[in-house]
Length: 118
Image (cartoon, rainbow, N blue to C red; front, side, top):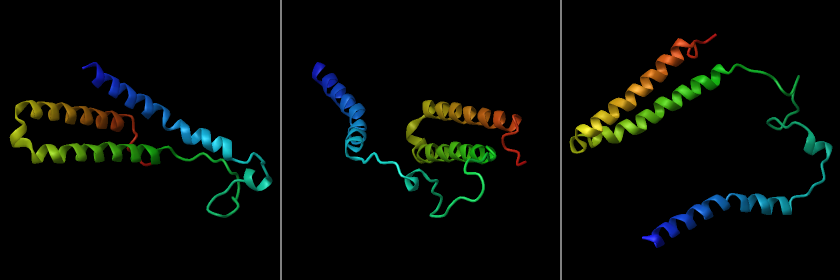
């Protein structure tokens, strides 16, 4: 039993270290000579017109987040609906709780005005 935990621990260590290896190698290999071209703002191959840093509406992000939430809901609901006969009452209660949490989140976003296009 301890060897199973050792394998899981080794996998976790490798998973935590692995992303840092390319970053470390990249920092060793990169050239560190900043030029005006490297420091200029690049936007679709063109020079920017006007200010580079602008503020824009966060409502775009809110719509995207609401879409992602309900898209993920569909990803979870479809397999559940396919295997509903075999899953039983416990799975029905779990899915009811899942949908209730999503409805509460939608109600909260609606109440706060996050879904109103201004």
